Amino acid sequence: MNNSGKRILLIGLVALILLGGAFSGGVFVGWFLPKISNGAVTTSIPTQIQSNDPVTVESNDQLFEPFWQAWDIVHEQYVDQPVDDTSLMRGAIEGMIEALGDEHSSFMDPDQYEQANASLEGEYEGIGAWVDLTGEYLTIISPIPNTPAEAAGLHVGDKIIAIDGVDMTGVPSDIVHKKVLGPAGSPVTLTILRVDQDTPFDVTITRAKVIVPSVISEMREDQIAYVQIVQFGEKTTNELNTQLKELMKQNPKGLILDLRYNGGGYRDTAVQVLSEFLPNREIAMLEEFGDGTIQKFYTEGRGQALDIPMLVLVNEGSASASEIVAGALQDYGRAQLLGVTTYGKGSVQVWLPLDNDQGAVRVTIARWLTPESRQINQVGLTPDVVVEITDEQNAAGLDPQLDKAVELLLQGE
Image (cartoon, rainbow, N blue to C red; front, side, top):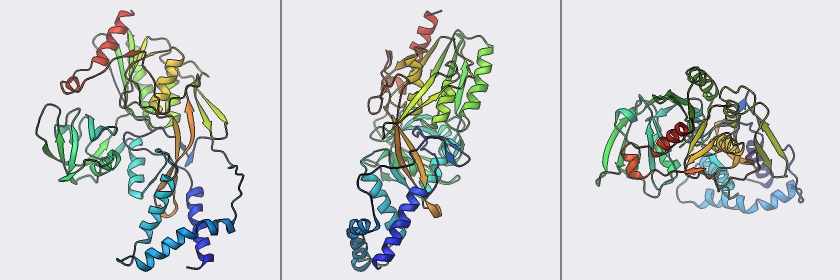
């Protein structure tokens, strides 16, 4: 390929990344993401990138000479020909994003992108379980009711150590998670290591279309209202609004908001959730861009539960949008946090889809802060009341964090 042709291809590749449009998505235990509206991300992105070294076509030609040299070497000398140009292109994009050194900026191939979008919309295809991506192995947090995972008898704390006979030791949890997902009707065999058993065992599960609830709630016998937000997705705001109405009609003594193992979701949904618990026009969060610009986001005044005594449950799986909600409630003294230190995800990503259904790149565009300008990235939120749960308590179905929250609310009557 001559230099002119390479230059055109290079410019086209850059255009795919920068001008492909904008979309938000996330893995099942996903991250905090700006919400989309009519196909556009509802967040402010600086419209101009300042640089002291203007990039010209000529300087790009020189900069990318080693890339095209490597491209030619692969095409001319690699032993197995022909090579897959699409795979090479995707690999080049993936390597470029990885070179940023940002764990939350990444490339997603078309299949991963499709699955990422599906979960926050409230349905996806897989086994139907909430999972923890933070440990050595992909770990079951809880089977979703009425799903193949529940029918197969998966337990809290089950670790997936192999899939279809292939050892998952050392495999990143997000890759393992993708292998568990798959088309409805297809089987997958999981090798499970259970806390109270010495020997791993196999479970074969037929995947299905899973409807993911965003909000689960109940009025307990002790008159404490319990609300668990599973993810901050498309349906969360309406589900929370409806369920809070029913709970508040019953005059509860207190309210527990459970954000444990909630890995995030849409930013706008987090602000809308806060609007149920904080007065109108309070600062919900701050976004800080690379040039120092700060954008404020405010509550929107629907406020069904502004005065009821309240506690928020958090743990190491509470991330991003969950931390936005928990951090604001803590800043304003509206609710104490109970549990263990949260994950510490304080950056904002947008998905930029590439043309011709070639996947998407996720790029960090800003960092978010609590209303009091607290930085939580890689630090997390420290609970006001620290209560841990052991693996043995988990396996036995005990929940000392929830028990303590109920105790404190009843003591405050």
